[in-house]
Length: 126
Image (tube, rainbow, N blue to C red; front, side, top):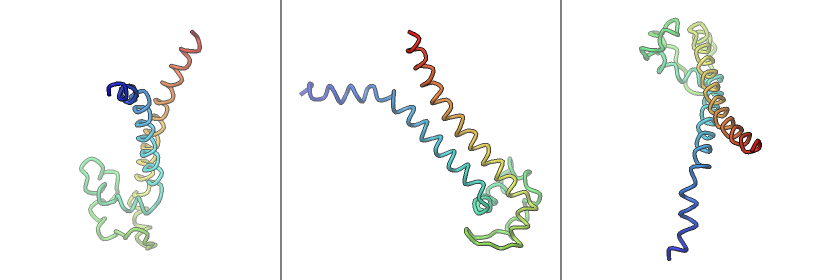
């Protein structure tokens, strides 16, 4: 009975060599995806309440207290509200946040591949 379990248990015991880098790649994909979405106006409009009510981020907006009167539903285009969001720096903040999230995703990928490259380089020198 133990003979049948030896191979699967050995594979599970050594799965961290593959699992941890794959988990880092998955985290990087999520950061890249969410960061790229921040450049779309509907996503910037959607995060407005969170930023306006945050004590740490509301100073990025010009008029954080007035956001409720200018909210739009997802996918809805109202030129007057879009102009207010532009004047409120909603899109500028969202672009900056997206840039930061994409940077985190790229740095995560760089960390995954630099470790792989470093271990490959050490093995090839030996």
